Image 1 (cartoon, protein in one colour):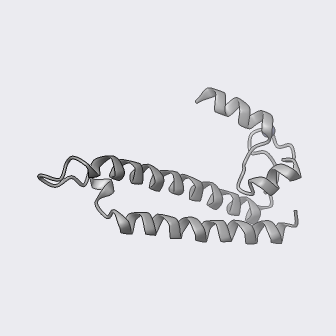
Image 2: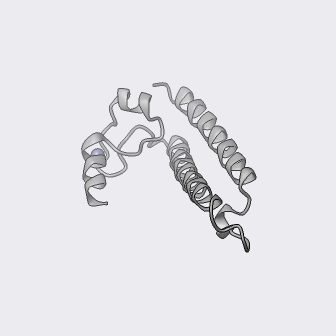
Length: 112
Ligand SMILES: [Zn+2]
C-alpha cells in the first residue's frame, strides 16, 4: 500500500472514531461519571455501562490509529513494532492501524 494511501485511510479512520466518541458521549453525557442520579439507578445503568465500554473501545482504536500515523511520519509504518519485520500487505489492508506482524500480535494477545 502506498504510504500516502495509508495516511489518508488512517486520517479518515481517526475522523470517524472522533465522531463516534463525540456521538456516544453526547448521547450519554453522564455515562463516565457513573451517571445514576437518585432514583435513576435501575434500568439505565446497563445501557450507560455499555455506552462507556463503547467509548473506551473507540478511544483505544483512536490511540492505535494515532500511533500508526506517527509511524507514517517517522518512516517506520508497515514494520512490526516488536520484531521490525515487514507487516504483510494484506494484513495492513484489513487493519491499517495494526502495529505488529501476526506472530507478534499472537504472542501479545496470549499474554493478556
Ligand atoms: Zn513482529
